[in-house]
Image 1: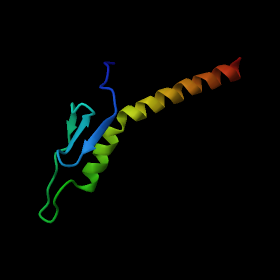
Image 2 (image 1 turned 135 degrees about the horizontal axis):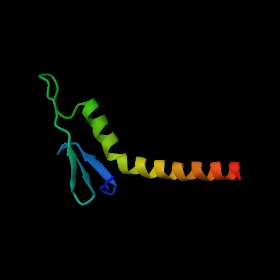
Image 3 (image 1 turned 90 degrees about the vertical axis):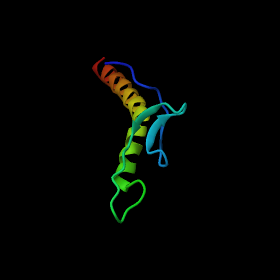
Length: 77
């Protein structure tokens, strides 16, 4: 597995982009405009925020993996 771009990441509604603190683009969330709808849709924003949370989710999962390994080691020994 290759490395990843460290967080934090954030979603900017105006640019429709998930980026790093240094403005490095992680991804662009192209908008689907409907006739009666303007701006970023709720679904797109939710997906973008989930993508932006990826570094924090990865860090939490690694912590839980280490914690689980400690619990298994403690119970087995």
